[in-house]
Length: 346
Image 1 (tube, rainbow, N blue to C red):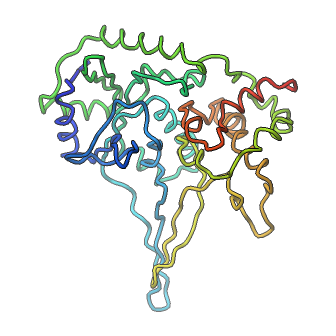
Image 2: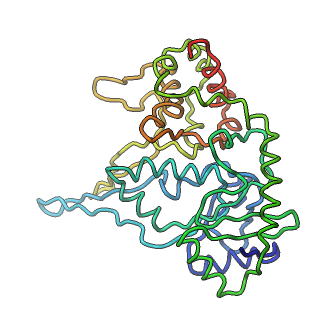
Image 3: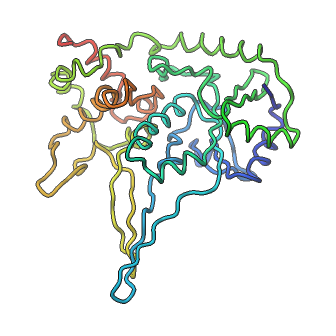
């Protein structure tokens, strides 16, 4: 167990970024999001969470797959090379680390997505315990310990401004050894971390959504009951189909495949899509989900039932609370869980 004083955090970032691309929460234009570390940027790892999740570093919003060009009468295909450089993602909260694990269960299952796999293999996640969880957080019901998140390295911030550091994986130890050679760390007492963990857990237990969410009823046993529930009629009514919830969600993985004409070549790429859009999965014969109610239902049935059926009981929600904060109509998964979980049919 190691620690580093707050006065040396900037030096820590500088040393890491000298050898690895470093991405961490940066405040810019009034918003906090993950961005590359550079001298003079307003890094902020102490604020609870970023507006958008860090999933974009493993599943980019736009990613080229290959470029096709015409050479004489032949078509030349140049595939996009896989990422081949190590990078560090710093300050990731427990819910977002779990979000990446949910993506792993999708993109690292057969058939493996090679682009995603390369990014995961080259990315080192430095997670950060949540010192100040808020009322919109509900990660605990989904089995996430925000006081000791997963990650290649786990860190904690003490009330007096020390960053405690503990490597958990081979990648995390490699980064730690590199930093130890720079003389940045001091030895730390594990008892200090245990105290911080206990204090964080007490805060989490006091949150309104830490208990009382009826997740245990969401299973394939009740699939048709949930699917046909009359609750969807009222739940979806205010949905604006803006897609905000899907774009800020750390586990949403829907994407579209498109082609872009670059003059003498065509770029074949994928980009994020949203199940909340009316043209999502649009085919020649039309769309299989013709109403917003059907699209709204699909999103939350996938989060709570469909995904766990395919992935050994794993929910496709991590309780980060971003949809609670950002939905313009105040629609979110907590309302869905309470409405369906408490319905008479199940």
